[in-house]
Image (tube, rainbow, N blue to C red; front, side):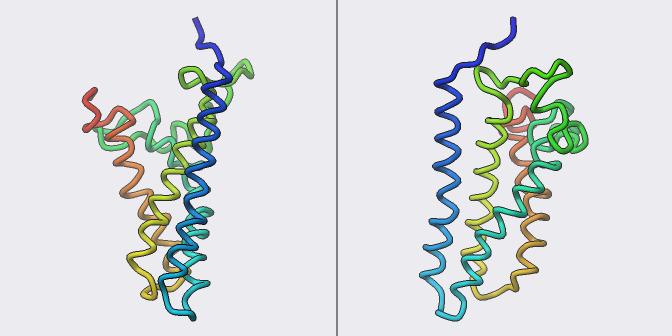
Length: 164
């Protein structure tokens, strides 16, 4: 039997994702207040830039690397299995793919917010030390090489999940 949609679970996941997403602008304001006046805009843009870069990378291959169906040695999942969320939102009949009692797309949004805030937290360690363009490249590389494999290993059925 297919999992039934639970509107309460779905609403709670969306509220939770929204609350975690609000942490990124709050972090930008916090970090912006901790640097010299000439660096405030750069510091805040690092957090907002992380939202854009990580959002695109996560939708393209990050979700697949973290929670895809085919694990590569328990280290990460195949980034091409669900590339661009193909097959993760609707099935061949047009029905929503479910993650328990809520649509998988809701789970994607929830997990994406944690990837975003994780990268934004790193920006505080490099305040006044890096150019914005370099930060954007670093953000994409770091989530691909560090966050997505670790997310797979811990929560996606990899080596550290206890189910490998």
